[in-house]
Length: 345
Image 1 (cartoon, rainbow, N blue to C red):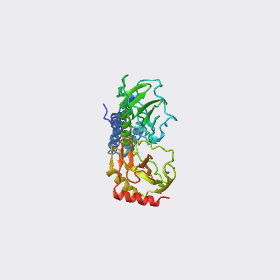
Image 2 (cartoon, helix red, strand yellow):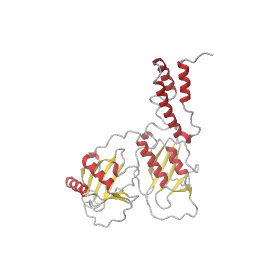
Image 3 (cartoon, helix red, strand yellow):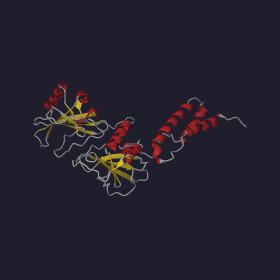
Image 4 (cartoon, helix red, strand yellow):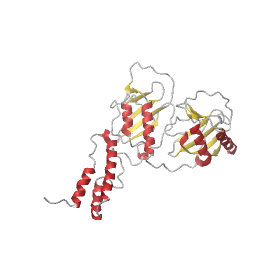
């Protein structure tokens, strides 16, 4: 029996490092992690061999799937979260849809889209990593009982649109009010907060691995129109503002504004104050509402729109209507806001 040469040794080592393909679509995330670990092991092993052997390693590694343009997830996810299928033009009626009573594994992306009730802030990027975690958070909810009693208020609604490599899609609609139902193909479950929070957590984690898009110029920010309804925050948070402008309404309800871009240093101070002086479940604040009624409008580094609406002139601002979180500016922050009011044109 002949002794193995360097090329045979390297081929056998690399073969052992390459992971087996996932047995089922719902194992895609684990396969991606395993593949990344395998590629790191392959590079480390190749670094210690002779230059002639490195040439062979380069060929084998390319065949194994680590070429520069092979940046897709094992489940067929697009390279960029912005390449995923867009939200539907109008919310889907999930009560009348026909299909499986759950969200199948193996989707290449999922988008957070608006529902039929109070609007939400819709992120521009889709989730392409950890998609099956969102599906599992829906499938694990309890089916709604037939005698479920619900409150009658309205609130924010959302849809999670799962896109599959074959071009099909599955939509789950959730209501963050009343019975907090989630509906997939006519099947009602209870617990709409869990899929909402799972999606947001996974999207924030995904963003930590990627570069944000080009920043927005503060000079292009527009004050709210008279018909604007502040969307319920989803991924974007006031404490993540990257650029912003101060808007003061000339007359309550007029929709005409004076505006001042907020300089970066001032915005950094205001954001720090928001983080320090925001309270959730703050209850009702009784105050006189007299013009100007200021807003702080802006976007995060990822393009999420944020609109902080004042309720008592510069006394306090609504940060999150879903949790009734309010920001009460400190004296230093109020001084900045008063100066911006004077600079607004």
